[in-house]
Amino acid sequence: MSQENPIRIFVSHVWQPNDEYFRLLEYLESARNFYYKNCSSPDQDPGTDKEMMRAFLRREIEMSEVVIFLSSLFASHVTWMDFQLNAARALKRPIIALPPFGSDEIPAALADKAEEIAQWNPRSIEDAIRRCARHEDTQRWDVIEWDPD
Image (cartoon, rainbow, N blue to C red):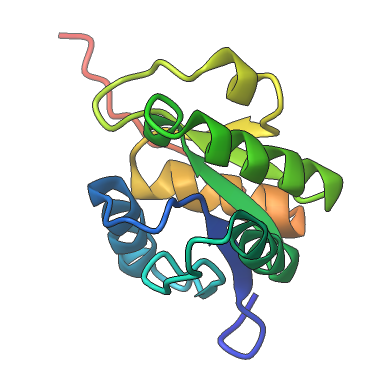
């Protein structure tokens, strides 16, 4: 991965502003030496024709290397999330699930199909993307200082 060859990601969306979508992008922007291209376009209006909307989502997912699902959208937009989940699986894109911010609960339908479940911190998300998209092992180690006294 480099600036010339960024990881292409698709983030689940339903053409509406979503705080978690923007929070995820902020986390990715804050990661050092992590280059990505966002293939999702929640701000573009595909119209109201359901088949056009499906084609729009398929095209975005097809351009990506990895799909990140915001599980908070499942509760209110089951049909569109199921469609995106099935499209990602049909296109053989690895799936990363993110629980709702501040929670650990992920819908079973998503958890069963996800390659990884990341937590809401930049390191967890970045590492999951690297592993799923490019099969990169980050080789990071946590250093914990321990004082027995």
